[in-house]
Length: 414
Image (cartoon, rainbow, N blue to C red; front, top):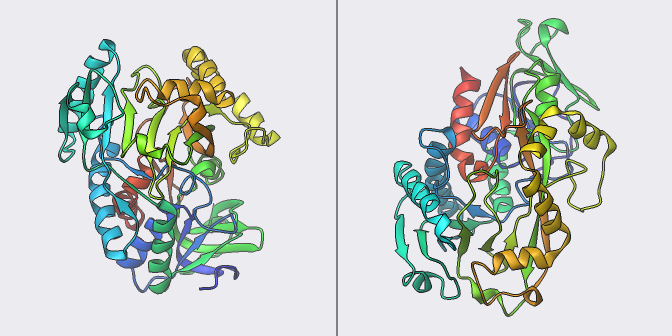
């Protein structure tokens, strides 16, 4: 399929963003509206360029999320649908399981709460394990108690993204790369629409514009900017958080069989350093969580002045730092001194040492913050001026992509 051609001047639906969620939405829209003209606009020169390919590949089971939240419901549903999709398409899927381990007595009440949430969310196969049972699941691990999720899996989200793109194109949809969206205005203000009724949106791109009846924005790291440009709310804002991994050296990957996680501190916004055995057999440690100088800061020293200025000017950034200043300093140290991150992981696997690790991949997550500095934890969807905007899609968005796309399309089709 040719993905470099100019997009159509008119279409019925436009999807903005070629990550796994945008592709899942485009595929679902085309499935429901086979006769509609649907195009997908992606700013980069390839699909799944950011969060969809810069991750560990974990398919979450739904343990961490508040019962009743969108994340809780759509994670469990999405994981089941994703497993079926991977089986149908012969895509990578390894149900290697996850073991969450309490390494100190203070972790036990927190582990109790995770078990309560997991059972309330309907996580399949969830089981509490004793100190003596931990080595049966992860022989090199140590802890007081554990929570085992045998259904947690790892996959390749980039490969899934390409498969979704292929489904969309074979059904008649078109994908257009190198097409960043600059703005979108109601066509009533521009004098044109696909139907001639004056309703819809005119999406401006460097090569011109696309008039569409409705649009869905799945813009990830650019979601706040595009929503505001289209008349959406001024907050939340995206603050880029860079996550760096360490990779365990060849020959030592066997220390961990699947996914080994600590019990997270409920006062901190992230899950802590964990170990993940990826689909290619690598063993990763991380990620760290450090404010980034750019929304695509895959290298530590990369800075985009506009991105950095926007992060610094947002009051929520300073609210987050005031609330979590100790953890923020620790994450800076973990990001710049691999020995610290390796030492943190050795609480779970005592046989692991700093000599066993080397630099690994990095990613940047789109962290949505309100003006007070509170993290927006649940999925957040906003409708504005004929468009649906995904304003916040944190983990487990990739796991939930097929289920979340179903919900988004319900809104888009009205």
